[in-house]
Length: 458
Ligand code: NAD
Ligand code: UGA
Image (cartoon, rainbow, N blue to C red; front, side, top):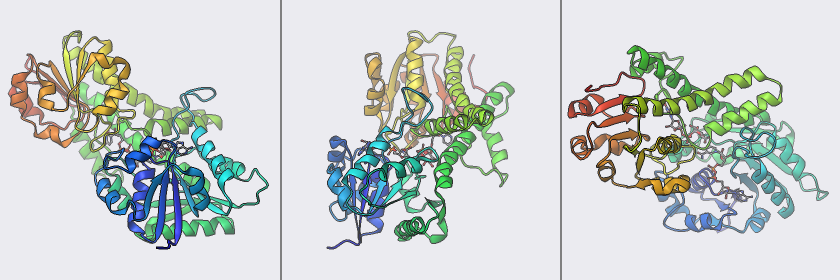
């Protein structure tokens, strides 16, 4: 069958894989190919054991793979054949040189731009799918037009707003799709081409367009606003713990104001995930670069409160358990940075595990999807930690359970059975406020939620 368009995505990760699977699923008339420099990842995408866990993804990939969705490592060949190239490579925080710990590391991005320039023989539309500092498209344009080949490239910004765990739903029924372009006739034409792709399944009124810089910046600001809500509610959770106010009741009262809204107001052990921290730090770096120190300080506060919340959790454990954790066995319920994903990047459970080991506690970790990643994240202290998939076996013989991830399975466990198998006095530190605290207390646990008065037998 002849396809109408050849769409290529460079980067077969958490964004590239699901977004392209959705395009292939909704648009059988296009040939969609995903390439990556990592052959192991590509082999996994071509297997029955996909490299990422995302509810609904397996089903879609099974239908479209080999039909109009293809995975391979032939980057150069695929660039040549593509009409539209989405670039979805990783853009982590820089760990070296100027801006280390703050700025985005654009080395993978730039390498891709050079590869596109070298391999291209005809006009192409390049779509920024990765999250990038505002003005990156300018650098991309300069790299792509820095040879005398005469090939024209149009660069668009089309940031991705999916959240892990709900990625397929977010892609299928997005709140909005944002496309930024240059406001030249060529830029607008390229923008319209991309609009037509999404219009195959997204209502046109939800496909919004803007200038390219607004689009790049909107992605950073969107993540900053979401993270800011979590830090706001988490900051108030500490005040609740001092005043007998209850964070769930406060969040409900505040969130029922339609101007505020009730989403993203769950107090927690802190936000994790590969993007919130990196994107806010990137925003902070940009503000400092432009001499906007007050603005930078404001946003940096969101990350500072998140670090404070994680440390506060450990200090609460320490003080509740008679100021020593040495030799005590603590079971972490969950390791993924949120439920319904195996992703552990920047998971609060990583720093909690490390802090517990520093306090000389024994750590047992259980998680239905993230144990392999957990072992990798904690490789340097792996011998001090036990990894067990069954939560009953993991909790047996422990002094405390600390809930790190809001997996549904934890709410349905038989806590009487768990209590019987634990040491006394037994503690639950609910870093997600998902358990039934009063029934745990009745069973005999000493219960420490986030942002609520503890329930103790002492
Ligand atoms: P990821 O690390 O899962 O995937 C990136 C992939 O790019 C990797 O497989 C890597 O091998 C590949 N890659 C790197 N350089 C390459 C090159 N030169 N050629 C070919 N492949 C190359 O990252 P991710 O989570 O998919 O994130 C990608 C981008 O999307 C980031 O900018 C991130 O901020 C943004 N984003 C992520 C999410 C999310 O939920 N993870 C959501 C929205 C936006
Ligand atoms: C987030 C955004 O929600 C996406 O829109 C964005 O595309 C993505 O980042 C990205 O750019 O990578 P994600 O990190 O996958 O998505 O997941 P979220 O649901 O946003 O959760 C992030 C963290 O905040 C998790 O650790 C979660 O447990 C925590 N969280 C979330 C809370 O602690 N409280 C809440 O009320 C909500």
